Every structure is written in C-alpha cells, then in structure tokens.
Length: 122
Length: 316
Image 1 (cartoon, rainbow over the protein chains, first blue to last red):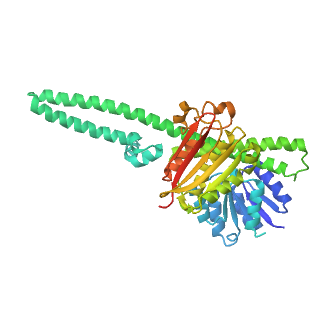
Image 2 (cartoon, rainbow over the protein chains, first blue to last red; image 1 turned 180 degrees about the horizontal axis):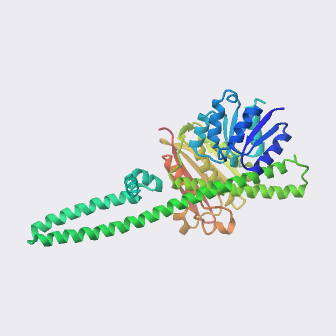
Image 3 (cartoon, rainbow over the protein chains, first blue to last red; image 1 turned 45 degrees about the vertical axis):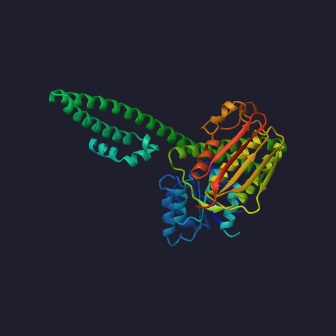
C-alpha cells in the first residue's frame, strides 16, 4: 500500500482527508506543522507528500525547499494543497519543485484523489 | 525614527503602490504637486509684487502670508486624501484577510460533506442525502461569494495580474456550458451557441475570461424566469472577437442601467426574482475585459431580457 504524508495544521481537515484516502487504499501519515512534516518525510519516506503552505514552526515553502534539497527526499512528488492562490505563490511552489499546486477551495475530495492517483502513475 | 519615517514618505512609488491608488489619487504625490504649486505661486507673487508694490516689506509680507495659507490648505487636503486612501487600503486588507480565514473552515465543511455524500462513511439514505446536498449547495454558494470578494480586494490592491496567452474562445465557451449543464437543465432554459466557422483565437488570460463568461451565463440563467432561450454568439469583428449573450429574462430597469457595472449594485427588480447574488460579478467582468484590451456593454429592456457583449483582441 502506498504511503501519503499530509502536512496540514488543521486537524479537522487532516481527519476528513485521511478517512477518505484510507478508503481509497492508502496509508496516511499526518504532520501538524512544518518541522514535524520534514522530520516525518525523512523517517517514513512516503510515496507522495501533500503540503499546506501556511504552517506553524516552518512555512510550507521552507519545507518544500528543504525536502527538495535533501538527497533522501528530493524524488518524492509533492502536491501543494493550500488556500493561497496568487500567481506568485503558484510560480514559487513550482519553481521550488512542487509537482502540482491545488487550491483547496476549488477542488472536491474526489478531484484531489484523482490528482494524487495521476501523480503516483496509477 | 522620525528621519526614517520622513524618507520613507519620500518614496512616492512605493507609497502609492501600498495604497493601491493611481498617482493622481496618491497623497504623497499630491503633496509634491501642491509643494510645486506653492513655490510657483510664491515666485509669481514676488515678481508681481516687485513690479507693482513699492514697499519691499509689504511684498515680503504678501508672499509669506500667501505661502502659509496655501501650505495650510494643501496640507489639510493631502491629509484628508491620505486618511481616505488609508481607510480604503485597510478595508481591502480586511476583506482579503477575512476571506482567506473563511476559506479554511469552508474547505473543511466542503470536504466533510463530500466524504459523507460519497457513502464511504456508511450508506446515506435519500432524506439524509437531500439535506447533505442542501449543505453542499450552500457551502458552494459561500465559496463563490468569498472568491468574488477576494477578486475584488485584489483588484483594489492592484494585485490582479493577467497572464495572456492565445486560446480559442469557442472552446472555452463550450467547456463552460458543459460545466453549467446541471444548472441549465434545472432552469428549463435552452442554451444555444452559434459560432462563425473561422474564428480567430483571442489573446487574453483564459482563466480570467472564464470568470467573465461564467458570470454572464450565471446571470442569464438565474434571471431567466425559468423559460425561454439563451443565445450565445461568437464572431470576428475586425481585430477583435465579439462574444454576445442574449437572454429573455427579467431585464434591467432603465433607471438602474448606468449603475450595473458598479460594485455591490443589484438592480431593484432582480431582488424580487432572486435574492441570491453579491452584485460583484459584472464589476469583476468589466475590470477583466477592460484590462484585457476589450470592451463590455449591454442592452436591456425590463421584462423582455438583456444582451450583454464583450470584445477581446485577437492578437497582441
């Protein structure tokens, strides 16, 4: 079973998404802040990371930068999942190595799962 | 600290950008202009005084009094403008922050409803399904309103860039009509698209133009009295492409027509038919079309219907 790390500080969102992804047959690991997310990514080596941008302790962009500059984690595909939607944020995330940028408000759970499947080549 | 504050005030471009106003509405720029006017007035008064007034003391006194009066007037004017610009900036920032803050709980709600409706958490019976659907529709409605407010606050803060590319307006229109299918069948209105055979591609930001067409189609459907037809026509006119949408809905009363593109304006008659709506759609549409180098306008008759149209340049 493929492992997905969800770095998101909203616990309610974590729970909903984790429940949905588990039903889809994924193992979901949660991290509630940037630092914990980075640490978990190194120890758990997930197949994919869902990353929010506004996070406590460490901003999502810093997490993204750190993940992409670490040999152990640089090949893990990262989907940025946030409510920020300015062109500057999207461009910065892609420049830093994010695979896809999704605005939470614009996507349903089903749509996000299909993006995850596509990213994982399923 | 005072010195630093003083020098930061001198950075006119940065200050105007912060307020999100044009140069002619920017307090710091106005103060600079007023300063130039004071100097010019003092010089002219001095020259005239030397020529026509014999006593140099009186000349100095006239120049001094005039300069002080002008300075006080210009200072009060720029201070008031600065107050207004600051209030405007705070309002836009407030709307932006509140909208962002509302988006997170709204995403939570939306996803929880998705999860429940999917049946993954247990079978949903018909009655529960209906209520979940009501929750879902209302969450989507709130989401749309927040998106509109965010766009307006970005427009006001001059942070609404357009990424122009070449694309087919016909393809985009067909895509939008498909997305609106459920709403179209609910409304019992027939939507017809007529496009000329050889349509040039337009040069604009497709994601922003999508917002414009969605707003126009949404209005035509919502104020369409659940009957009749909506005709969408696309044709090339010179170096532009014309998009026209004609409905047979409630129309806009004559006295309201000149306010229709203003922010938060809602026509008196539409409130009788449809309470839903923020009055932001046409304001956003006008801004996007004009910034894309096109024009937007309409013709309307109360109880007969409206025809909205816009043009977009077909090349740079």
